[in-house]
Length: 433
Image: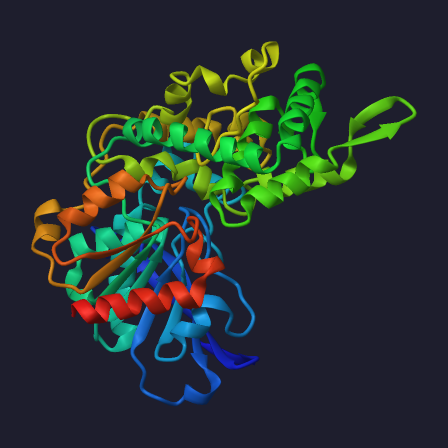
């Protein structure tokens, strides 16, 4: 059943689909997918080509916007858009601390979650395409992890694609998670250095907060235990267009005077809770490292192990000397499953995923080398989340792919510069076609 309704300038339709949990067992268990169809009000009855949007993540549902802002407004000039909540996210069958116990214990939960990677998402897209487009290939726009999914799409089912557009999401085809994080920590350090250059007063503020956390047990309003490592992880925002400003605004009012002395303010704690909690996207923490699993080697809490190779990120050592406290970025660590109430019940499940040794390939280099789908990718210079060198190496592997390399935007350029970014990419791919 579908339901249509209106927002300013658009007609929205809620769509639901039933797909196999395991596409290799089409007669087995099923899950539900949700997607929101969006079309410009003045084009609602026109026969338009389809654009499927795959959100970044993993673990995030599609954008919830009002009207036709940013890149969506540009897309609606010529497409009917489908915003898909990838399996386990948004309104699709959820996977979180509340629902996963329905599967059984940690072993059953981990086995279930092996079906939530890019290859399964691509097969979901192909399963619903016939119903949505009548079998006609569609244009797919993939942001960040959505771009990883598009690369898998080009590998597994290119016949379903009319055009492929990737923004900040060209993955390394054969890198282990260790390779990804060894490249990531130096980039993160550069972003932190740039932040302190912009806001030099934040260096002392960050040290003061970290020192307080080393000597006090701080619990956020939602029950999250704010350790020094958790505080450092707030640096994940530094890879976004406005992230450095958001972090500065958080730090500038961290402390308040009370009759008992100076302490962290309620406002700071509330904001930190919203930024740190995985309650809205637990899949991000659970399967993040598995998106790099493609062989018999376990991911084995890669970010945690690799971080030890970069002692400059050790907060205690930084505070003992004169070095600045370094924030961290897009990495998942075992301690998160102790600090975050949304993740605590899932620690053993996460351990089992980290130990898994039977990951299957997500990309087909030979098929990509013979690619015939028009494809273009925005590659952001010094992207904090996706290594630029890895992306460019992959770009050279995919036949016919055209890149737009820019330092005008950070990783979320499709959000901050949406119409211009999408306009540039569509023009580029059509010029190639």
